[in-house]
Image (cartoon, rainbow, N blue to C red; front, side, top):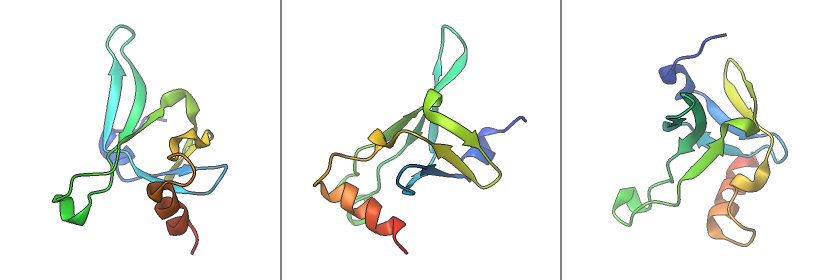
Length: 98
C-alpha cells in the first residue's frame, strides 16, 4: 500500500500500550544515505496560542510503527511520552480518557 505525506498528516498517531493519541505527523525525517524514512515528527503543542512557545517535539522512529491504517498510525513503544510527573504527560493522558 502506498501512502502520501498528505494522507499521513491526516492520521492520528496512537500509542498502543497506553491508548494515548500522541498527535498527527507534522513532518518526516529521511536518512539521506539510504533514502528511507527514519522518523515522523510531531510538533509540540503551542502554549497560549504560540506566544509562550511550544511544548517539546516528539520524534517517532519508523521502526516503532506497527501499522499505518486507514484512520490511524499505531506505535508500540511508549517512551514517546514525557517522563512521569511532567505536566505535558498528564495533559496527554487526560486527553486520552474520555
